[in-house]
Length: 574
Image (cartoon, rainbow, N blue to C red; front, side, top):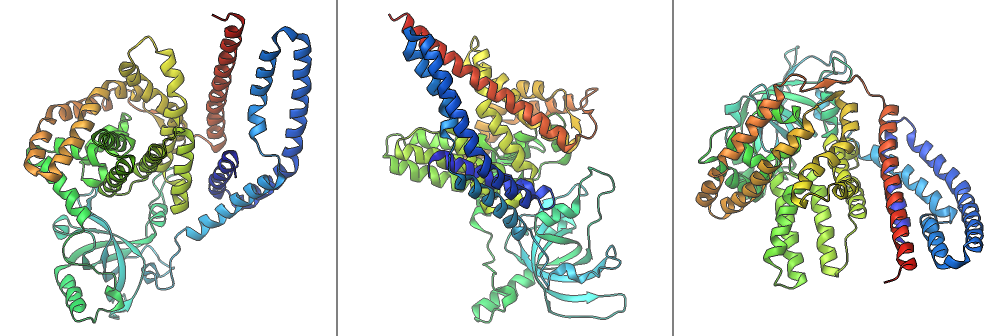
């Protein structure tokens, strides 16, 4: 299988996942694949034959420049010659898309027979049910907008149910994931893998009140949960003691078969060590902001008003783990190990990437960047060049194989669209600004290139646009550069020697204050957000079709310019 065939199958898989947006979309994609398998090979052969006939006519008229005519013919046919002529390739591509749509539905979470969501009756499902649940903490506790602590709980047993009829049921085995919120003090000292018992009210999420509003039920379903628990009290020390005692006596029940030691996971301890060192000599919100820029918003609770400022002015990417952190870490590792063998460089680089992904909490954007980083390391190991566009496609395919539900995750979509924009739109923009130093030109090019590709999706999802987003990103670029590099250096120092990390983080206090002031100022300007109305799916497709058309036309123009330069070089040899 050549590269073009592999690209076709990767794109077919992604298109198959996208087809799940339409009922029976997989069958439509399969039918399209069959139609293409029948018609396209004939059309390609006909087009190639006509192109060769036209090329012969041009060579007859231009005998004095036959070499140039041959070159023009080969370049015109190069794209179509790369497309496979075999009908089986296109049929299998359609079949791949169909299988992808089925795989999506297979992986979509569904409540099991003993799922905890079955505790709420189907009739009157908005009623709260008092319950005490045992399970394992599956995430780091976070602070919600209401000031409560939230975490995910892998349930395994219900110790008590109090229904309206007063009946009590003890130690009923259940399964499923639970969205839990508790008073802030109740979650103090809680960390992933704790075995706890939570007492509270079980509820099903309400549907969105308005079209386009946040769908809490859909969010829970994507995470594999179908109900929430409004907790009042946590008993975690006793539950962990029971689990430890059972392990010592080799009498652990299946409910606690996945329990671990009382100590927090290593990656959690490392993350907390970094965050504490960066917060030691800084105030809120400057300290959490530096940690969020270095490790992503999953690593620290950034105040919601600061998050809102950044989102409103188009700086949300600054507090999300992304390719910036990965490129910095990978560049630093390669620079420090350049005297070593390529095998050692690959080993150190891979280890650094694994560590960074763990510290940032396995966000889709950083996983994408890490996979592209691994591709760069493999190219370094094999002494081959890297094709960023192909690397992006491979990263998307691998991540969607691991978790096909990510195809409808907004963070995943924005990450890949922004990266695609940087790959295909930045070079022509840099050519237009070649009169400027590259470092200065990139400050203007990067936000423009990324914004062009993510703007249609943002309009479709939020129906709001921020007129100041590009300007804010240009102004904030130097501050983000300082905070990103300084935050990563202080994080590394804080992991090894916390006092040194604290001192380095303290030096970032004024850049952090400046970035917050910038976001706050522009978020409060008149017209900081403009409502554009609901964007339909057809309009979204048309917008991206126009962007892709400009991309293709720019590529064709560059090929024509290159062909013209070659012809001019042959006519005027030096």
